[in-house]
Image (cartoon, rainbow, N blue to C red; front, side, top):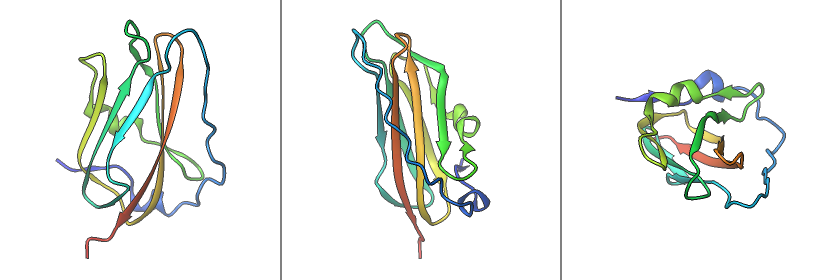
Length: 133
């Protein structure tokens, strides 16, 4: 099943001119981590896997804090499109999108999440989608 991650109309919006700041709230626990598994240059449709790893061994990812934003003006909240593909049954939360679709162009998606120790992590995905022809 294909999922339209970014629509043509959303891609046509002006880029957000501000770069998101890396948020680093240092505490006594290790920071959570976001790992993105996708080639930086893809053709649509493509597969995208994101791992949300809590910092400390006893911590859990707080899914209520999850934000997934397509950086345009105005920004596009992608969380509702992606939530059906979230597996939170383990300590490491996995987002697995197969056959994700996006129009050709350069796209920035910001992932942000907090763990149960209230530590916040932000990851910016720079993705270039090329035409399949």
